[in-house]
Length: 367
Figure (tube, rainbow, N blue to C red):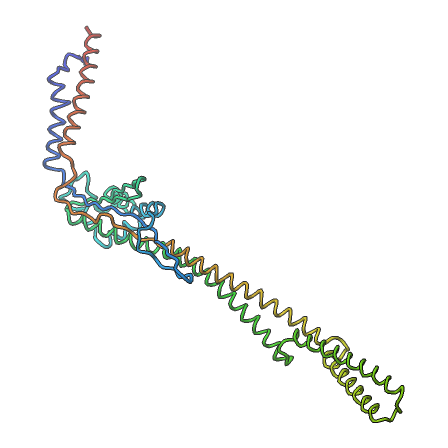
């Protein structure tokens, strides 16, 4: 059967390409298409304002902090996550709502669909728009009635607020936990070092070997100088006195007493092997003091690090700012019947013009 372009008359083309599609479209949007209502909210993630007062105290200010764009992008991914889709379904029974038989067959959720398909359907009903100008996130939720659309939007905001709080608090807690652990370890080392110093002093029954050594050295030097002076004086007296003279005997007794005292001091400051006992104690004591000083410096550094971590953790605390709460629609936003019918009509006219031109070209070649 030979095709004749003459059969494609303008009237037939108008009926097939314009009238029929427009009638089908009008019937669909009048009898089949279900109204879909939209609830809209606008949110942002705000960083905390940290005020450091006198004495190093830190407080969270009441002023408006900077908007955290990176965390807002995290929030955007969370709102479209499968985890939140399943939680909202368990909380609001969303699958039952979108599986209603009266719903539009092209926009309803068919019963028995998989979880993965439900997540994709959920994302198509929750529209997110992030503004890179002011960092605000707009959340639009759809439902077959105004109440459901608003409930879904409110539930998303509740979960989003918990997500922001948990995320920021977890990061701050981990940082504080690490710094607190370092401070506890430094405090333990400091206490152990100081306990060793006290145990050393108790075991040797000496408070400060350094001062004791200095005092012993000074006393020994003084005794040696006194003995030297007394021996010189004894020689002078023996030049014109008898050895058994009372003054000579007295001076000799003083010299003997000083020598005995000098030997006693030397014995007290040396160990059994003839070494320098106070010197050994002094060296050990200095080592313990050095270890204690190092531990104290480590404790001060850990304490400063904890304070810095506390300030940094306070800065990382975020909060969800609700710029506009979820609205309740009075009229259905979807489907846009007039707009869609006008768009369909424009497409039909374009198709008609193209087919009419092709038919006219074929008819010219056949003639």
